[in-house]
Length: 431
Image (cartoon, rainbow, N blue to C red; front, top):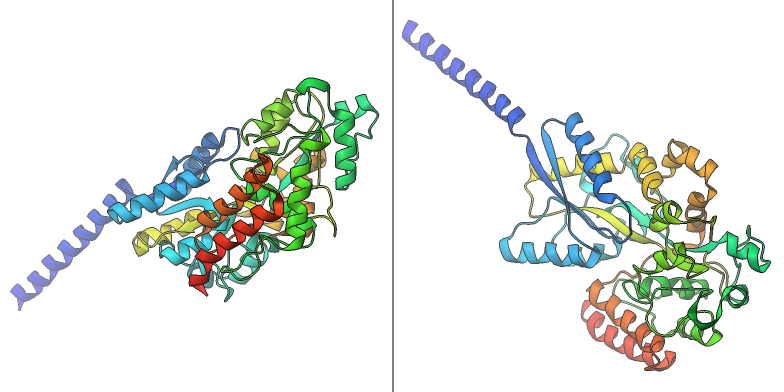
């Protein structure tokens, strides 16, 4: 009996030792989470993410988030797909285009974050705190949440208030509609390309900025069904006719305008007004030597309109359940009102949670610089970004159609008819 009890004691001691050793090892070697993120704007985003990771890792010693900058949005999407298809592994969590949610669902690369939301004590309140417009690219047809809004934006109109004063325009009033956009642009343009009244980028994300024209005409290029697009609907054709006519008005140069060059042209005084993402706001304000105005995208045939844009946070099927749970803790941290407030103030991206706007530093910043509140107010008129099955292919089809008009290769109706046919050939298989 003594020998049996002694054996039990020895076994218990070994178990305790093993548990203690595991605990020490867990502290010495926290679970590593690979986090990929892109950028489509200027500014110190790498430093910001490194700071957030350090803050999170200190508060969560059992997890170590490793941030990795992975290029632009298309770069990160391609890199992740290549990794998963090649090695069966990828990041544990990433920021990717919100518009890619359906594509990654179709490919089986992501898990629905609804499962983690359902385990929260206040999951419903958590979801309801996000602006409804930002959730449009986060849920499927059944209302299941697959990704969390984070690095979100809308395009806005930036304008040079000093130049408005110079030509006799009210610096406190952005052009309210397309007629005023052209009128103001003509007054602000100087001869021989010395200064353009308006620049709207037509590379990088041509479909995205164009969506604003279409939505303001009463017809988005995509609806609720990810297997359906409306590229050649009459209001969309009319929108492209207007967009394509801007160089003819003498306020914008012919040909392709580069996305990344546009903010620099604005801050250097080479352009008086530009369309660009609100994610560029902080960088523009930091580099402009004049007072910057920010306004809604000018109204179209039925009123104001803008697409939402930017990136969501995703969790991947290639991670273990433990890694997925840790990734969700990182997502909870990044999507918290406190971090969203800080993130928006530091970058110009729109804080995706409504409660973040009631916290500093964002609350004080908006009071001091009202430019930061414009995109939030424009969300009332915003609709979803172009998101379909095989999303990148479909976006490229529309982008190419727009480019054909911008370069004078085709007329709007012909180009959009061709784009609709090409998109139908792909999407019909999903119906």
